[in-house]
Image 1 (cartoon, rainbow, N blue to C red):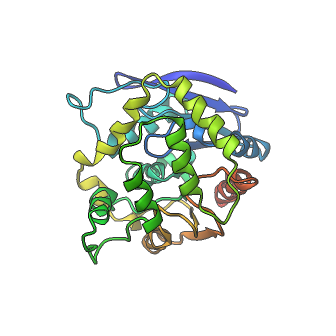
Image 2 (cartoon, rainbow, N blue to C red):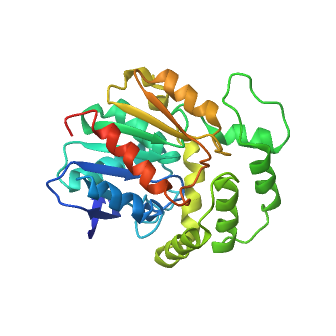
Length: 297
């Protein structure tokens, strides 16, 4: 395992490569406000044991990567996708197998649509369709307003109650851990010590923990690139979704499967929106590996 900083324009992004550089590469893209290390080590190690190299990185405004003055330099999803391409460029990778979770899955879709030659296979974890804007949906749901019949469903009532009940809670590990408990759901056991350890590590290594909240503003900068049809995706695609996901309910995964040609929808029973349940990281790694196997690797 080696850590290095790479450049994305004027920005510095923290990255980590695990596994032999000659092996097929998997780029893991984390969700909103999340550092690269939220992908559990067990998932990374499983992929390496399957004969792959794995690259994790911190988005801008998270972890050890550059912090942005978003008032002077607002950014959107396409900028975060450009960062992902910069990571591939820095490692000399013309293409990679790409796996993205939540917002990271939306970034992965952007890459598969707008930079198809860079994406060998696509694994979309716990995410939604690229054109869906969860911000207005969440605001309407929190206000008790009727849902737009043309939009995808809002988060579950339990998740909305959690957000409402913690609106004035001070940020920190305990608040994040409470959110993870809700996002885990009640079906699969929640490995709280493992989750707490990762959250404490994230807090300790973050240049500015508060900057991660900037990801909630990326909807301010949207362009037509987000509305390019997903039917243009040609990479072998697996959609992995938990039937207990409280943020993006199963309808989001079904919409993705309907939009992407020949996509395979794999529903993980009992899985929520986080991956801190015993055996789950290895299960997800195997699904990423099997998706990659649909190509020549």
